[in-house]
Image (cartoon, rainbow, N blue to C red; front, side, top):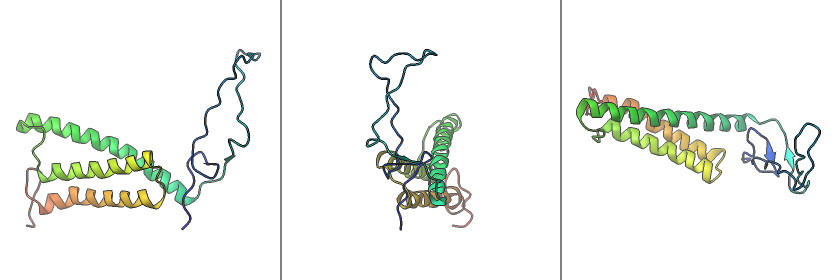
Length: 158
C-alpha cells in the first residue's frame, strides 16, 4: 500500500506539511501601498507540489476534521451530563456503566487526535483507531443500554 502523503494544502518536499510563513526582510523598504516586502525562501528549502488530493487523502482529512468536531461535542456532552447528574443525583460521576463507557469513548478519540497531532499519523493507522472508536461508541450507546444494568440502562436482555 502507498502511504498517504497529503493534506488540504498539498505536499511539501514529498511530505504533508504546512509551508512556513515568509518573514519580513530586515530593513526592507516599504512598497508603495505601505506594505513591507517579504523574504522569499530559497527554492531548495521549499518545494511545494500542489496536486489534487486522492479519494483516500480526502477521506483521511474529512475523518480527522469530523472526529475533531465530534470530540469537542462529546466533551461538552460529558461535562453537561456531569453537571446535570450533580443536580439530579448529588454526584458528578458515579461510575455507572454508561458513564464508564463514555469515558472510554472519550479516551479512544483523545488517543486518535493525540496520535494525529503529535506523531503525524495519516492513513491506515489512525483509521484503525477511528474504527476502534466506532466500536466503543456502539458498545456505549447500544450495548450498555440493552445489555447492562445501571442508571442509564434498560437491561431487558440480561
